[in-house]
Image 1: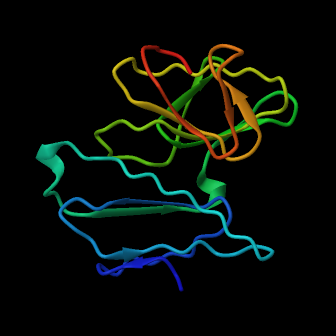
Image 2 (image 1 turned 90 degrees about the vertical axis):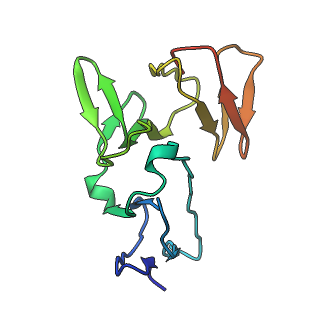
Length: 159
């Protein structure tokens, strides 16, 4: 079954693809990423719209993996920019998701062991970090997030 909605939008979600839907005043939809080697992994993130935007028309965007900008880091590590901007050295790289007033910063990050990465964030934003595989030390050595854990980070301007 292909991801689709009642407005006629339909896609084919494969590894690394992104579907971004603004439900707004309502959209009936279904998502089902395609299995690869008998495995299926997909992530959903729901972002609450400001009250003044809840009745706007729904909006659908879909991007193939090749359209998601990737920044290669040291030791075969990388960062994929789905929404928002990442500053790599002196260059800003923007993700393909546009037209979202909540200004989401959504990255998929793969780091090697012992690698450190600092990402500036807006102080007033809610910051969530989900560890899909491995472990991540957040801020201080005694704050370890393990695979399957989600953390909300507060009172800072850097992840």
